[in-house]
Image (cartoon, rainbow, N blue to C red; front, side, top):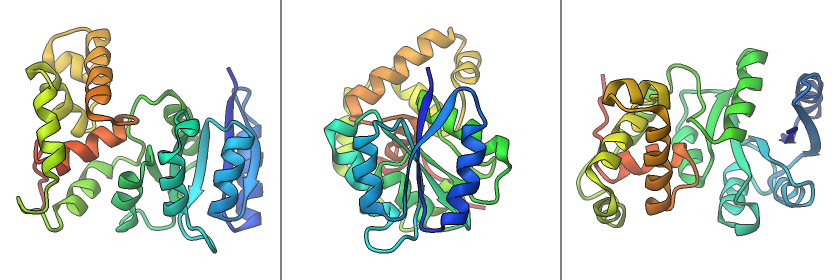
Length: 226
C-alpha cells in the first residue's frame, strides 16, 4: 500500500526538496503541499493523507495548532503527524507530542531518517526521533516535575491497566521496540503488541508517542535528568 504524504511548510524550496525525496520512493507519494496550518488541516482531509510532515513555525495557524485540530477530528483519526523542527533541543518537542503528533524529526536529518520516519509513523509502531529523543523528552517533561503538575485524571486512568500492561507501558516510555520489550519481559512480540494496543485503547492514546507522554505525565515513569 502506498503511503500518502502531505507536506506542510511555508518554505516552497524545502517542500520541493521533500517532494523529490518522497516521490522517489516506490511505497510513498506526496498528495499535497500546504504553506500554513489551516491549509494543512484542509488538505489532510481532502487528500486522505496518511502522514503529515508538519513544520511548527508557519504564518497564521502554526504547526502546533494544526496538529491539535487534526488530532481532535475523528475523521482524521488515521492521520499521523511528524513535526519537523530546526532545533531538536526545543520546548516545541514536548508541546508537539502533547498536541497529538506521532513524533518529531530535525530538519537536518539524513534523507533515510526522514523516509524511515514516514514509514514508522504510517505503521504507528514507534515514537519518532533521533537517538537523543529519550533524553530530550525526559528533560522537558522534568520541567515543573512535581506531584501537583501531574495530570490526576491520567493517573486514575492507569488503574484500568493490568499489571502486565503497566510493565509494557514503562518499557514503551523507555523508547523500546516491541521486539526489545518481548526480550526483556520474556514474552512474544505479538503478546507485547496486544498489550500495547489494549493500553492505547484504555488510555485513549492515538499511538505509542501518546503513550510515552501519558506515562510521564501520570507519574508512572519518572524522568531522569542529568
